[in-house]
Image (cartoon, rainbow, N blue to C red; front, side, top):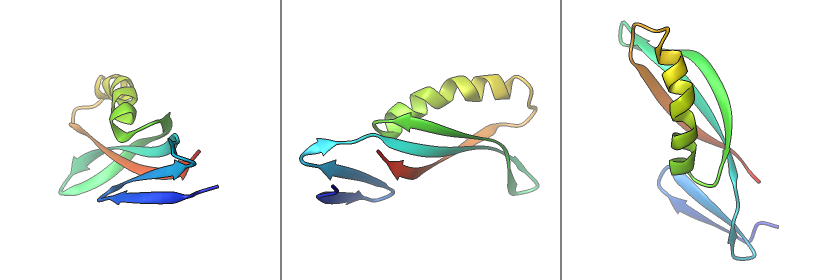
Length: 82
């Protein structure tokens, strides 16, 4: 049961009975070509925070970067509170 939601700009922290719950984040890995972003990979990451999500994403980004000539940009979006 959701008791409260704290809006912190882009990030929300959902509280259930005083506990911070995990989130599922949708992460798009994109490259920029001619001033447009093109998604090359999408992943769903289960994490307690955006910071934890970013740590998990680094490994995926490094694997993708090995096969790309362009810089990879990461876009993280909250998908679901668990």
